[in-house]
Image (cartoon, rainbow over all chains, first blue to last red):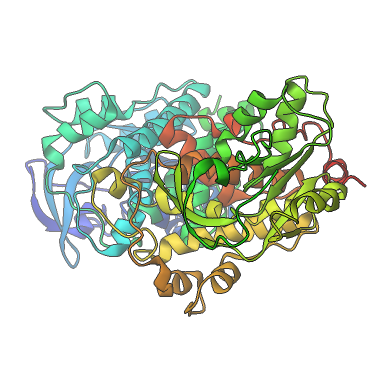
Length: 312
Length: 312
């Protein structure tokens, strides 16, 4: 596997470079797709992997590496591959055309963990000559539970559902209201509590805003979101058929709620929001999303899940 | 107790007549208040009741008579009163000024049940000379589970929460969207299933629209709501502090979900919506609302609850 030209600092590139597909042709390890496609990718490549191959979900969202490994297993793959996930996408970028990506910048530091965590060191040894930006996270719970999109996106879509369907344009973040922000805070608090139950100190939404942007001001999450200059002009989705639900519910809220409940927490706001989404979309997100079975944790106690995740 | 002049067909009246307080002064049996005030009324009158007195919650919403009786018990009342509830308010009316009510019309037929149901006949004997409109319902589950406001109101407020807080005016029913209607349908289906579990055939939201209004057309609840000419001009609440939540969640969704769960149903959309409301409002509606304890059903199995409700 080879990466970008080390002198590259941004610009328009071939999507295959972006995904680690070029050059050389045989290096097929970087998986850069919406997280709800990870299972399909795992299924497609289950019989084409080699022992020792490094797979990087870039990023994994919540439970990406766990789901990927479980799909390989379900498909009879017997290779000993190293499955890992990044906490966020290495690039700040947008699609610019068919198979072209506009890279605005490359992040300086992105936490990454393998499953189990004792393999993280080996994965980083392979990656560091190409992508020195990746650094060791504690485990895939640390990379997975810092899923800020799952906090911000589904709540805001659901509490704006009728306005989105009515076709009235509005700004997704700048038109934040205090009631929506209270739901975000409840979802965020449950996520932090679930992470803590597994010994992971996750980043709160407010901390994340303060770290990621300049000019964040205020005591409440509501004030912080409204004060973020970088959010100006980000319009709301034009339809309820948006990845803010279709990706963030099954690969964010569902695994966060499922892991929290395995740890004995009630997770009422998170469970409630997923249930409401199931009704609005007439889909069973609990079944199609990353539930404990899809994460390979079915029937395990929390302590057994932790051992499986850490490898010790 | 005396009622309105039998020749009265509508108009502006003294609110005390409306509540059965005039004349004569001592007749204090009609309780015509938002349902979240029933417990306070019960507490206030617990030591001023007489054996055999008839109490009519007009209407009771879901579980009104059960909560009323439990509050009397909790306050040490030892009177044998006949607590009953109407399915809906006898009058179509709006407040017209301090202690004045504008009565647009008097409904032709309003189902009523006592708690337990074997007392319904006695209550109707007392009421029929004054209010012949009251007819016998099967039991307080039949009057209570036909709570259509609990289906229409909280879902529509929550899926419009940000728009309401933003102060953008819109029509509450006529601006219905298909996503909101799918949530209404899920909540409605769970309510019907819960009623059915207790042997009650509740009225679906669509049936109710067709019975209550002229000109309802369409296959789906969405079409039926949008087609209702009577909904034209009904504007949305101007704030999240609205009885569409403050009354309909604690005295509608909470008892419907609680009774459904006692019957072994999951009630996911209803539970989910209440949980989301708890987060948005930072209130524990499960605790302050009509849960099984407040309904006097704590620790009972479903069959025991049914016996208590029916008295046989």
